[in-house]
Amino acid sequence: MVVRPLDHTADVGFALEAQSLEELFQAALKGLLDVMFTAPPQGGRKRRRLKLFAEDLETLLVRFLNELIYLIQTKGFVPGRARIQVEEEESGYRLTATLFGEPFQESFGFQGEVKSATFHGLSVRKEDGRWKAQVILDV
Image (tube, rainbow, N blue to C red; front, side, top):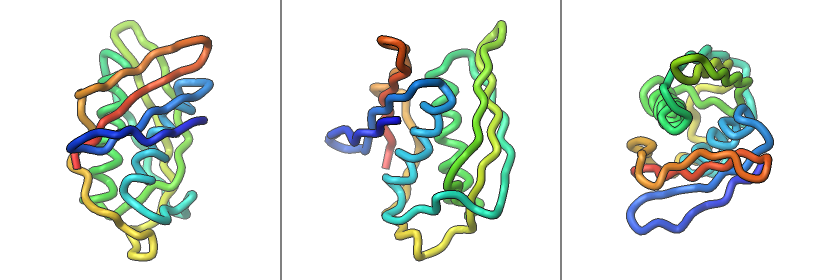
């Protein structure tokens, strides 16, 4: 799994690379946590279930990240890791995840609010047998 920060003038972005779609979404969680915290949890005792559907992978990735942002900033739940399943269906893609995390703590080193994941510069593609994505966050 590879997560590389992207230079962007007004926002924050990252490029992702992984063997599978599930690993790509795991990398997106890690990228988000790296933007938001200096020392995010690596797992956690608390669990949350997440089910999302979207007509394409780009929309699914944005919905996933925006749901994580909501859980962190509104519910105070910081998911350190996730068990993720992505399934292709006739009309789109379904993501089912179990998030493992901790209640928000100052020791995580919160670096500032993220407003949302955006569609600007967004891409999700399979290239040379690996999944790749690029994400820009509105901060």
